[in-house]
Length: 324
Image 1 (cartoon, rainbow, N blue to C red):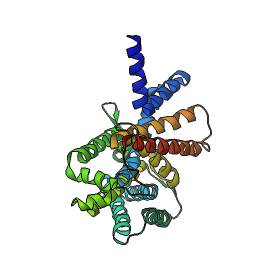
Image 2: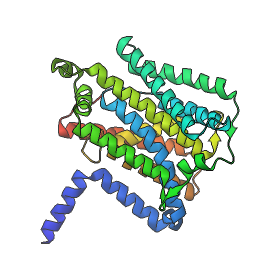
Image 3: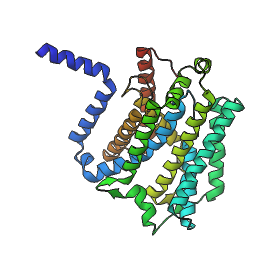
Image 4: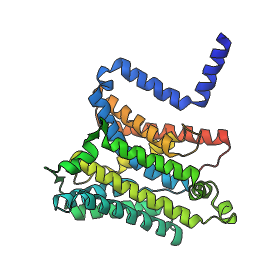
């Protein structure tokens, strides 16, 4: 009986190594940092993790089709400014959020046109978009932060809760489930995986790879735009300029770390969200330990490197192609 239990434990660790590390890490936080599992802190992690989840899902969409989007952080940042600016100008909550999502969609389609039709390499195209969008952000806010007040409906989007569950968690959960179902149950979702796995083979099989890329980059832009709108709600405005590189690193880390969870080596939305919440928990715990915020980017870079290594190892173990 003991041998059976030992064998089962070994198989669990082998197949769910990353998940095991995550659980062990959270257990350490629980034992060494009592405030970590307080209700208020868990709610903060859920809200902050929800924002990161949307950005990581945006990254996941383009990675699935074998693409690259270095501009998600910049799009997220400018849409935060757009939404805050429209709300303070009296355009209403829903119109402000809709315009932010539409702006994100526009930037996503712009990336796709450059990559697919003009044939600019994805890295170069999206880095260019990142700098252009950063410049537009400065032009829009003139280097000034936007502060909101007396906007209870807008603030409730990311700060409020329904039946004790943060509204942002509900929004992210619904979006994640919808994306997961679309990717797994609808042919265009499966076509996206096929496009990322082998674009030439997908074309030979009659798959419209251009449409797959359009959906991926469009969804990436929309999710970044929605994340920006919710960020404006969460921080009650916008900063003069956020941290697009920090957003980019954490989004990459969550996407690749998530690929080592649900199905080894395969990008998927459920794994991405779980990884995003874990990274948020890690940052939160380090802050509670008194670690300087100046060190956090280094920790995020370390997580990204480990995620890439584990993700590539998973692909080799399952015989899948790497997407780069």
